[in-house]
Image (tube, rainbow, N blue to C red):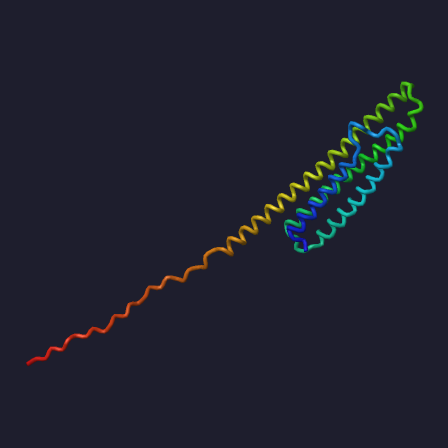
Length: 193
């Protein structure tokens, strides 16, 4: 079942899902500033957690194939990288949520030097965390597309080689030198007188 085509399609589907996850992230230019804003971030952490679990199952299923074809190994390897990048994304979103709680807690105390410094630091951490989440998901999508291109190119080469071997001229019959059979020579009989 794990043909190059099916692996390529599965990876392309995953790339679309990751692009959709990245689109849900808050923009770095309009960062959340209250803990109430964290509900959508929490939902996204949950969705990414489900995706990470799917990656684990996909790796497990592919690792059980014996012998493992190159395209399946490459796919499993990519799933491992994607799980790692999604883990980094979840970690970044968790850090953002933590700092949103800090902003919510310290917001009413704004105006004190130490509080203002803590609020500024929390804002920077949120900005860096959201930026990290964006870059990790974008890089994951690029990695998937690279793997798809490699698998598709390998499959195209295999199909081209198969087509060439199917279209090759049949081997010619070995050359045999025809033996000429001489016709019997009839000489006129000369009678002596």
